[in-house]
Length: 301
Image (cartoon, rainbow, N blue to C red; front, side, top):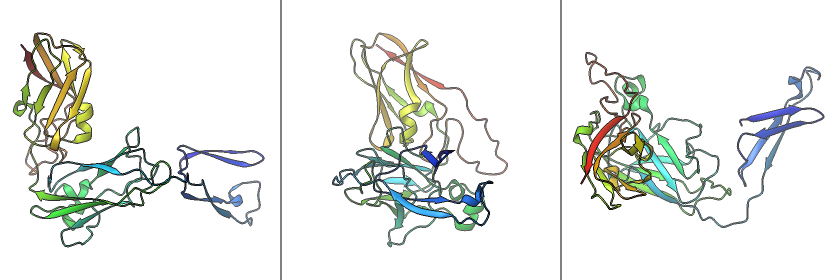
């Protein structure tokens, strides 16, 4: 575990993150690593844990994104949303994928143990292995894509994933998707439709996209400006991640506004504005990575 140590009259360890209640940890001390101790000294190991809270399970999976029933075979990222904060464990041992014959599909996700949680620990990011998604990469040549157009895939979130209290989920969660063709085109804001609100109201401005975009990135990639000033308000992502709405804190004024789009925005297959995730042939020119926001104008009348 990540953390810091101190060695004085005793050895102490402070973890970078709190221990999970109800989870066991192996503690190992090897005195031979200390220069002042004989090399023949034996290592000592013990198992420690923090008692569980005595509560009943109450945390459940509230959503899995994308929310569309169809996903492209080159899907790059998914999200599992929970009803309450979770513990420190990642999803490597708690998420599986099965095809329609009931066979578990191996090596779908990147085997990372890094922190893929949001700040509240209520949303976990599932990253599908880009090496299998992107063509001409060795894992793709050896194994092909994990998802195949025309098939079906079921993501299973296991019940034993501990929440912030060390308790299991209330139940296992299953969600089946139909696999569609790959999405290989860059985002083009010229194809977006903006439904402008009416001046003097706090009606939402609605932006509709021609294809689903990444749920997590949508929540932090779009904002509204008037002149050089950001407009205070709240945004929300719509069903199937094909639209976004913004409601201002104050009434709209007549005149021009701008939808500000951060360059990190992607669709579910990793395509960005003006740049596809992968080059389709070796002779294709690769556009430069965009570093500045894109602005989409609209008028409030």
